[in-house]
Length: 136
Image (cartoon, rainbow, N blue to C red):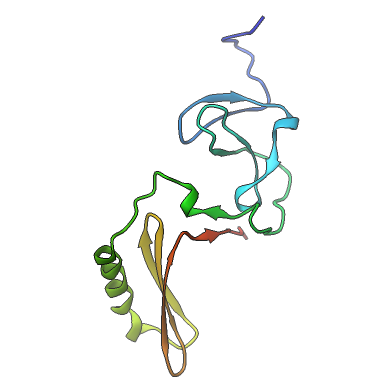
């Protein structure tokens, strides 16, 4: 028998932010995934669902805890002309930056970084990026 609705809520319950599925899980379903946080894979859409956990995040471990933009088909893919608008955007801030500082801008699967050094400025266009975030 499966209970469809009950006034007693299970302790391990969450909602998928991507598809809205209401999920009940047990500890065997959880693992440390994106950004080193504990979560589960949604059985409806397959996306990683963060869960409230008292467990500390694990240290960054490539590729396990990293978010991969190329793996997300819903992200927009930018044309060269669109990327140039982001290059222009970061260049507008170049004069404001001191050596050792940086700025970035982007959307979808593309980020544009500008790094200011003592004697030069570097611009990096990153597509298909892997990233991790560590909260303090």
